[in-house]
Length: 133
Image 1 (cartoon, rainbow, N blue to C red):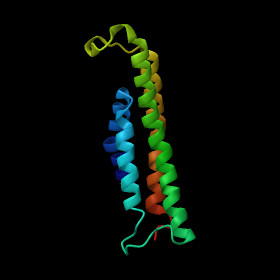
Image 2 (spheres, rainbow, N blue to C red):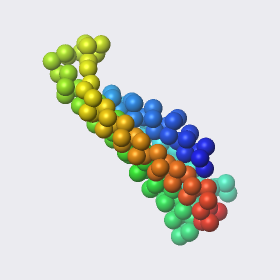
Image 3 (cartoon, helix red, strand yellow):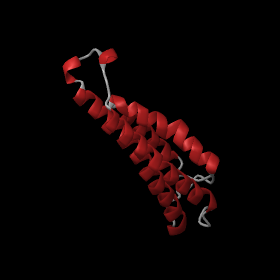
Image 4 (tube, rainbow, N blue to C red):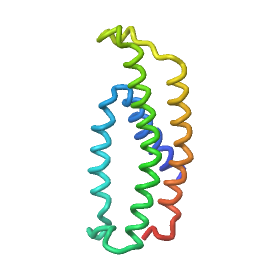
């Protein structure tokens, strides 16, 4: 569960939150994640996990917990990106001259740090839930 949480955070959420500096980048990756979520909504026997209440509650519970953690990371990155562009409007397209003040960066890091326990909770529920059938 810890390895899954670490992978979700380091290989998916963190790059997406850094891509949030572009503001539009994460929307593309989130669309891809939604597509993958649709694929894994089908189990090994090629039937929907939503066919009965228990597997549906398990699957939707895992998705909700992961959605919350990913939303915090990605939203923090996008907010930091918006602040970056707002503070550097006079610079125009000369990105090498962009500067980011300390406060939005601190807020971004706090939001990302707050998401880590949520990733652990989501992965723990995913692997240790008795509903995982």
